[in-house]
Image (cartoon, rainbow over all chains, first blue to last red; front, side, top):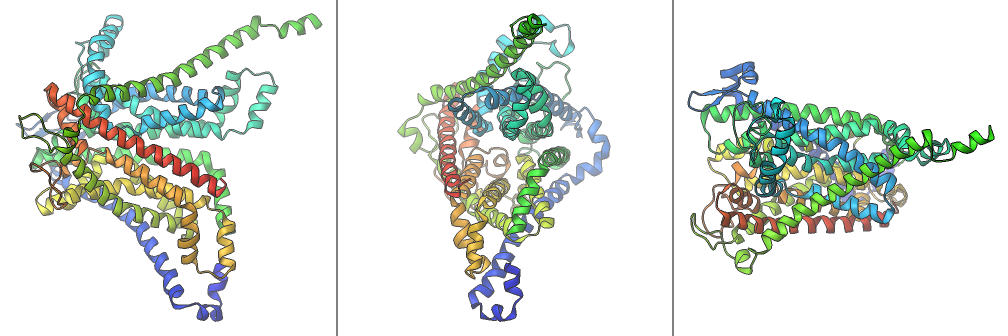
Length: 328
Length: 294
C-alpha cells in the first residue's frame, strides 16, 4: 500500500522535502547497520586467520593432532586443548541437558503458576551471573569441595576406570565441567521451557483423555513435539560451553598435555587463549590465534546446526510472522 | 467383566506401576528445579556472605593499592568499567536498533533472514575470539591497549543481543497502528520513528539493559585489550583502564586470602549491578508487552 503511494508521481511530488530525504535516509542508515553486522563477522574471520598465519604456515594441519605445547622448543599443538574442550563440554552437556529438560517439565507441567514464574525468573538470573564470578566461586568454593568430597568418593567407587583414577585435585577437567554445567543449564532450560510452552493444550488433553499419566503424556506428546527445540537448545548450550574462556581458565589448572584422569589439570582452546595470549609473542601468539581459528570453526558449526534445527522446529511460527509482515 | 473393569480403576497391577513411574518422574523434575535454585542461592549466597565483610565506603571510593600493599579499593575499576560499558552501549544500541528496523521495516524476507542468521552466528562467536579480532584491529596497529579497544569488543558482543531482542519487539508492534499512520499519509520514516519505536520502547530498553548487563561482567576480551593500566584513577579512553571483571579475575588467581576477600567484595558489587539491571529490564518488558497487548 505504501509502495503504491510512492509510485504515484503526483503524490510523490507533493510529499515534502524532509519526507523525500527521510525515507531513503532511514532505509539507507538501517541497511548500512545491517551490512556492518555482516562486515564484522567477515572481519573476525579475516583477522583471526591473519594473526594465526605464521603458525598455520609453520605447523599446517598437523597442529590439530600434536600433543605438545612447549614455548622453549617452539613446538605447539592443539590436541591437548581440543581434548579438554571436548571432554569438559561433553560432561557438561551430559549433566545439563537432562537436568534442563527435567526443570522444564517441572515448570510447564507440574508447578502451580504462582511458583512457576518466580522459579523461571530465578533460573534466568543464574544465566545472568558473570562467568568470572562463577570462576571465582569455582576456585574458592567448588574446587576445594571437589577435591575433598566428590573426587575421593568417585575415586573410591569407580577408581578402576582410568578417568576416575589419579589424585583428587581442586582444579581440573571435572571441576571445569561442573562450572560449565552450572553455566549452560539455565541457557538450555530457558529455550526448552519456551518450546514446551508451545505444545498445544488439545494434544495434551487428548493424551490425558486416553488415560495417560502425566509422564506418559509428556513422553508421548510434549517430548516428540519439542524434539527439534530440545536438540537445538542443547547444541546452543554446547556452543556456549566450548566458547567459555574465563571461568574455565580459572578452574581447569592450565596444564598443556592430555591426561586421562578427569581429576587432572588440563586446558581448553578458549582457556588457553585467555591465560597465555597477553604474555606471549611471535610463534606462540600465532599458535594461540590458530587455536582461536579452530575454536571459531567449532563455534560457527555448532551455532549453524543449532539455528537450523531450532528454525526447522519453528517453521510454522515463522510463516505466521511473515504473513503478518506481508499484510502490512 | 464388570469386576475386571472396576479393577482397572484401582491402583494396582499395571496402573500401579505406571503411577509409580509417573510419581518418580515428577519427583525427579521437581528435584532438578529445586537443585537449580539451590545452586543459585549457594553461588549468590557465597558472594554475598564473603563479599559483604570487605565491602565498605572506603573500598568503593579508593583506587586499587600498589602491588603488595593492602587497603586499596575498586573505585578506579568501577569508573573504568562504567566508561568502557558506556562507550560500548553508545556504539551498539543505536546500530543494533537500526539493524532491527532494517530487517523488520524495510528488508524483504530474502535479505532479512540472512541478516538474522548472521546476527545469530555473531552472537555465537566466543567472546575471546571477538577479543582477538579487536586486538588485531586496534591494539596491534596502535601498539598499546586501550579502553576504547575494549569498548569496541564489548559493542560487538552487545550488537546481536540488542538487534535480536529489538527485532522481536518490533514485530510485536500491532500492524493496525502502522496501517493507521500510512492511511494518514505519514511517511514510512516518520511512522517508524514516531509510532513504531515509541510503541516498542519498553522492549527496546529491555534488550539494551540485558545487553549492558551481559557485557558489564564480560572478562575475556578485556584480558588483552585493557589489562595493563597505570595506578590511580584514570579516565581517558585512549589508554587502558581498570575494570571490575579484570580485578576479580586477577584477585581470584592470587594466592593471598586478602585478595580473595577483595575479589568477593568486587564480585558482590558486580553481581548486584547485573541482577538489578536484569530485574529492571524485566519490569520494562512486562510493561511494554501490556502496552502492545501481547
